[in-house]
Image 1 (cartoon, rainbow, N blue to C red):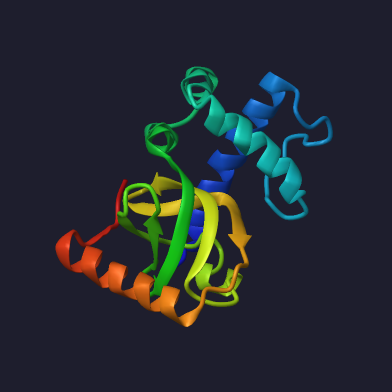
Image 2: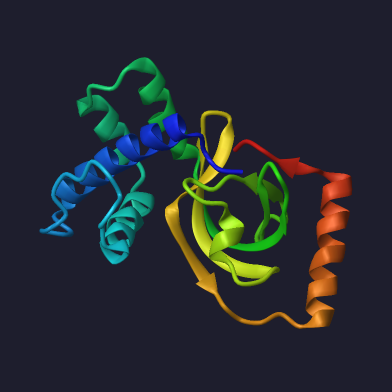
Length: 178
């Protein structure tokens, strides 16, 4: 349901280095510095930098050219070019992952939390969120920012989402990789 400690450390190392690169390239947040840990970072600063990254994700290639990553690290960051940004409906929580549905494609994705299960960030299900999902070592995670839409979904809409979930799950299944 969440990344192992070693995976978390790798994710944050690579993610923060990429954010620093993007921030330095575009001069977005003067006080961002070169953080080695996400602790104490301003979520608004992270969101500003990551929004620029996903608008111009070719910057990943530029970062990869200038980085000193080993092969495994290179492959992880390179895989992030397969990101999916959008609005999702969080539908179910399982032991292995949380299931979200992409509104545009009606595809179900099983995503993992980074440090905490995604369900811990949500007061109820189903719930609409905006995020960017990215591959990570054979799993799907989000890019560290989830924006919740706290609109309460009524009983009939909930039933409709559950029916749609079962229909898609039975016909297509739940994607665990991007």
